[in-house]
Image (tube, rainbow, N blue to C red; front, side, top):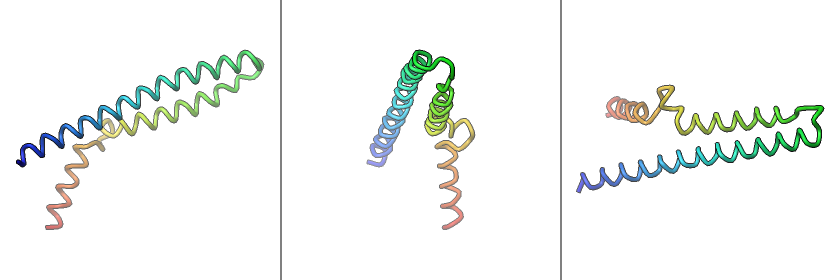
Amino acid sequence: MENKYIEEKKYLDAKKRIKQIKAFYVHVAVNIVSLAVIVFINLKFSPEFHWFWFAAVGIFLATFFHWLGVFGANVIGLGKEWEEKKIKEYMEKNK
């Protein structure tokens, strides 16, 4: 019974992770299309001032923070393994 619960939890965690990764890639695709439209509008209607850079910086920051939420925690050492390790340490300390 315990083994079935663990397998189901692993499956649900993997499914959640795949959903997060898929959402990130959709976000990147939407940002690329949006930025292309913004650049086109800027260059078509006011080519003397390139204000699209402001939008590009905002889009880049939003994408970076989304990446950090999906992939970055593992890269900087604060991923799922770190979280589980800290939970075990806390449980051991507070027995």
